[in-house]
Image (cartoon, rainbow, N blue to C red; front, side, top):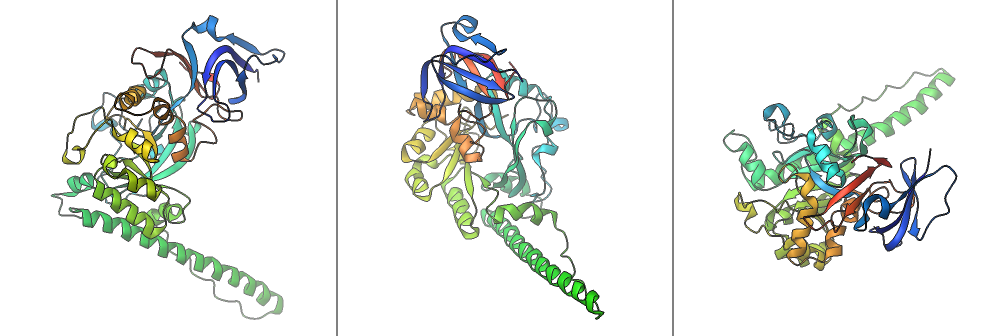
Length: 413
């Protein structure tokens, strides 16, 4: 593969080891960053060289591809109603076995708009109709086939607390109609999964013993032992196994402070890795969340206070959480806010008091860390995916726009 080098351009890497580069280069080949630094790289033979200032102008600078850690991109399609709405399977309070990748349509126009806005990676998953909604996927925003766009799938399991499950099941004469029932359903399935895990572990031990005894019986001519019965397969529990084992994080939809604390309580009870999604009341309890080591996605904030849970909606929240020491990502919750406005949401957080560098981290390296994909994306470092945008001006200025976007080393916009 041919190496491409963009030189003579400022680079904001979002990496502590690389830092900000006043005039430097980035080299990439076969989808990965192979070099980055100040000055110029000794040019390999046959490489493609782009002079950043000549190609894009004096205001150009390179930033990592932006990341939104909580969206429904491709599951709720643009300009369609029921036909393209695959966000919520609102027929069962537990749908842990559902996989976002089976509903994402990469040909939805919003992928193109996201790329044009400098967003190169998102987490896309089910909505918050059910206490347990299903598997979230981390995907790139470029591609025609979802299987070729996956960074990690699943990257998290969706849980939901508060108004949304209550509203969905209210009037169906079916739980949950209260916050108590929502929490109890989550506990019930997590406990069932623990027992399911124990049953399978017991079966595997019994099967190993059976195989040893069978081999011995055949060698000695003794009666063969009875083969143990395999536990009955349960799709929901099977999907939740990595959650209760601590291998797959839980993402809890929670706006209100009491719901956030319920999420923490359940996570502690079952030893879950977890993050809070939305965290609307987070500003009022930021010190507690920091002490608990909570990570969170803040938003969507560029919207109205459409329900009681959003009473505390404020662009000040991500800054308050960041200053308290909470690892925070900013989210559009696309399509609530169109994904291309992710930088605008970060800019409005800065206007409300958030440190500018912190706001940039909240749409680059922070969501990558929260999602556990920071070894590949979120900052510009050797060995990471070549996902970046050349911005004409400050990306947190509403008048700025990307001149070009690369995803996996391929120019996509």
